[in-house]
Figure 1 (cartoon, rainbow, N blue to C red):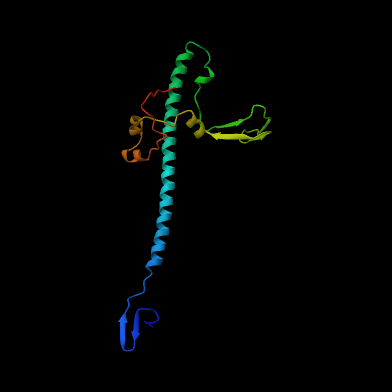
Figure 2: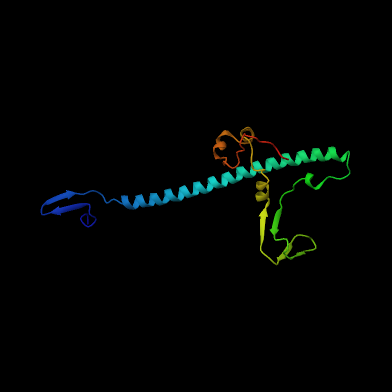
Length: 173
């Protein structure tokens, strides 16, 4: 039995110990598969963390923008009865649908306004609130703001696209 399992070998009266069977190669392959799977999971989690950090910065900037507009709006209403379109607050969530200006759009809405159905005669593009706010530049913050917003351990995970360069920065809202 031990010879069949390749633990010992026998040549005439000489018996040699070979050792217990080893599955080292099989174990190594399994560990390499586990390592690759865990590295993929870590990469995915890091990307998710970077997206959450970017959203946090975006929402913080949106709140600051809306608060500034509210203060400006209150001051303006003392002198003018209406607020111009550019001075309104941005509410969440929203979507923006882009299409060619000659596109025919048919819109149907339920009575309770819970569902809306669109039909387009040409191709269109849908952008969610995160994409639009990012295009407005609200996803960026300077290093000082990032340090106030996040613990030191998270600052290493802040994506470069979120870090506002210190050269010529100004708030446009």
